Length: 167
Image (cartoon, rainbow, N blue to C red; front, side, top):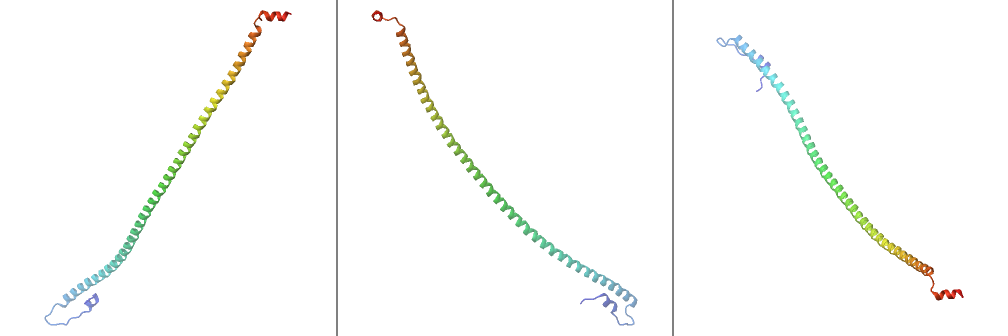
């Protein structure tokens, strides 16, 4: 049974001869009415505050859920980004290894060509040296023959030959 301040103030009692002092009862009733009135106002204020706090609590719970969802989504995105970055880094490393291997192979091929060119140049040099030696030998033989002819021509002729010349 809910009792309000006005209910208490309007409550009336029958009067008897030797009953309670009406002024004392009235004062007590006034005090009780004031107390109940204050308690009712406090209750209303507290109920309003509880409703407000419950609304705020609901809002905070919703925010917490949204933040939790955002955090989870952010963590997933971060993990995805890490995975993608690692995958991309591996692709870059693989491409770099392939390019390095290609460059090394090209270097080996070029080295082999240079070695072949060097061998070919050595062969050509040897052939050239042989030709120069043969030319020098041929010239030396010619010089020797020419020297021999000059010696023979410059040598005094045997006597028979002189007499044949004088006749």
